[in-house]
Image 1 (tube, rainbow, N blue to C red):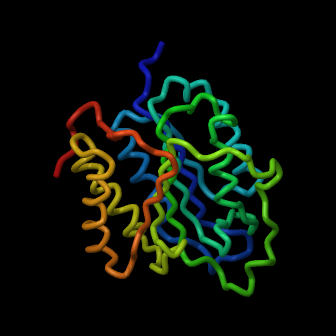
Image 2 (cartoon, rainbow, N blue to C red; image 1 turned 90 degrees about the vertical axis):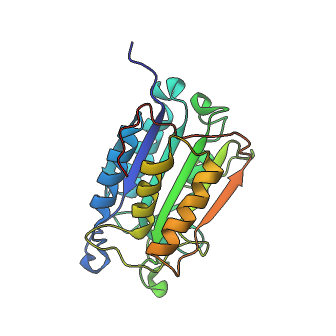
Length: 236
């Protein structure tokens, strides 16, 4: 049997949108590849998915939720990058939106027993989205199960902005949010607990994007958590 992975990482990157080349997020694949490389070096297993539709997104999250690998994984990390929308939604490639709360509910203890009592981290890199007057045009997907009347436990959410979505543009090199995150993980993931790591991230992100104010939200997360690479192969 394969050794248990340190954790499982699911990367959902939305860079292309149907009939809307003006919404293309340049560098989104660069961000995803940098994240995949960083987490792989830390001993994580996982997959990156690019520009899924709303239906494909729901199917993929259901597939992840039911994976037996999660039973052996020490934690789960979900990283979603796209355009953000009002009311805490994000845009999928077919111009539909998915409720962030639905994603969180999908991995509550009753819905995903494999992750019960395990750290679950959700990282949201959502930029400003398309024009506000267009927000109602896309249908909202993801609320089909209804909200699960159960508190979130062992969940930490990191948003690229306390306002829900950032205003910085994507570039060929990716976003400063993901760049700062990968840099800090490479230098400190082996030695710093999550709260200490977050303080290092704040300093790094403030240098890269001075106007951005990220937000870390705790939902019943009382664990001392280290990303904990198995080998010290990162170079400063």
